[in-house]
Length: 332
Image (cartoon, rainbow, N blue to C red):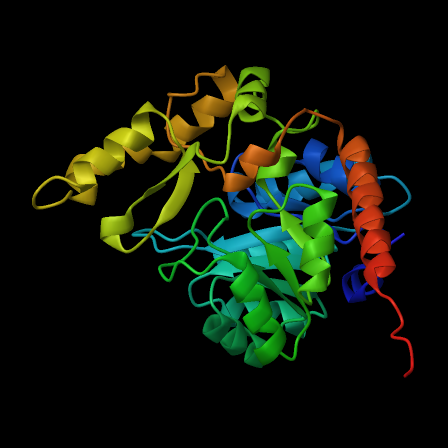
């Protein structure tokens, strides 16, 4: 068993967080991760309204064994008509949730409210300077998200190894590692770089309990680390997604002389409802869907219980092996 500040603070037995994922962070997956000893996380904005989030929280509780902890993700993104972020936060607090993963722009008001209610907040950042700003807000943990991640890696293209080492130099608040983690070897590496655990998204997509069509899970198993692509680079809103016909068309349009206009050229291609259809129908080219380069590490579709037991075994084996490398110098 690996014990860290993360496991101690959250009351979990494996230092692994299932990060928020649109259309994926639903009660069956969340409960399966938490029941296996990690931290399952409901994605708030997958729910149409704060009241629907309440229902998802209650459903999750019916699936959780022994009152194990789980969390809620609230990701704040630019929008013409923003969701009721405060309403989602309030609904979760009123339903008794005490662990939150936050991410995105201007999280200050949400973090302030959550902390005023006694919640534990894990805030995701893609740069050390943003992490230091979040640290001042009073978050409990930082989730340091490297360039390898699915979704939005920021615009500075800093890989996880350097980013985590910089976090160790600069941060006072404990942090976990996110982006590119899919096995126990990665967990051990993150611990060596000063992290208190890891955040996984892509790896949990290819589990039995993930609400994703079996065809997509098999495609993930068959994929390599070369099967993702960045879209929206020219718009300053980079996102790593699975490389399919739609994402390649987005990149082609962006690379045209004069670039692409989001509303005119891209909006219909990247609509969230199309991405949802990928998971529902198994049509890999139905829309845009997120995947990190950790997809290249996925070789099977286990249950969450099987996966987290494997994480533990692999990480402990690596840690034991590293201990064996240490020798005592002979005194002269």
